Image 1 (cartoon, rainbow, N blue to C red):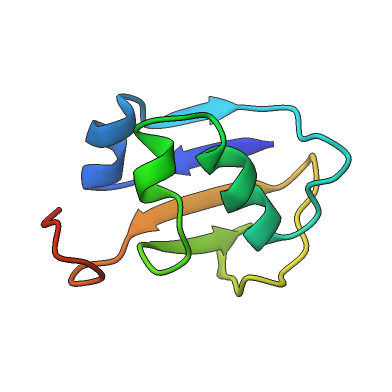
Image 2 (cartoon, rainbow, N blue to C red; image 1 turned 60 degrees about the horizontal axis):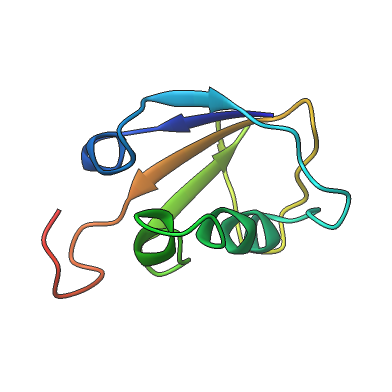
Length: 86
């Protein structure tokens, strides 16, 4: 899977993209965000549905949207989602 980090999120995670192999248990956007958050900081603080807008293959996605190994995932910060400014 290709992950693309946009805007301030790319600065926070210190990369604009990466290739990852998904565990078999990760099948939805929500599970993907949980898996990324489990990596520790800075992902833990930022990979929550309220703070991230996700695209799957360039289409806006919902938490239950299916994801797979060959997908391209865009991760965008949501402005005003918390008291922490981007």
